[in-house]
Length: 108
Image (cartoon, rainbow, N blue to C red; front, side, top):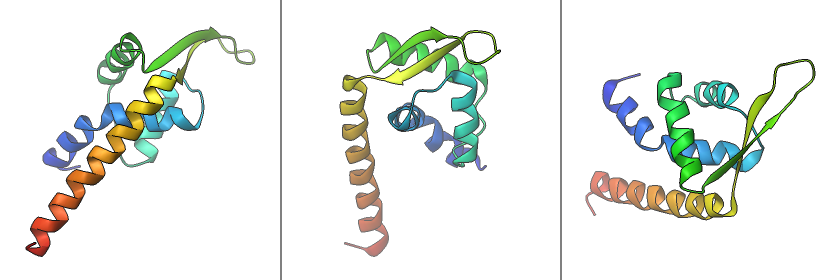
């Protein structure tokens, strides 16, 4: 991934995490794997976990401890209603910026 592409991905990382969680509850490691599978980058734990803490402090996500099968307890994370509102607004902002880039490219 090019450096400037990684910077763009990093700037939309909170929005990307909210989008992932809008589909279903998940946990940190699984979220990291999904970011890779969606070609958003292989972000380290030191990037993703502090961001999850910040999103929770802002009320955009909520977490709970859950035991899954025979695995150790995991911190399951879900999006809140406030997070859904922020996701919707963030997607609109990104679409607005992309529209501006298209206008520049087309000379409008």
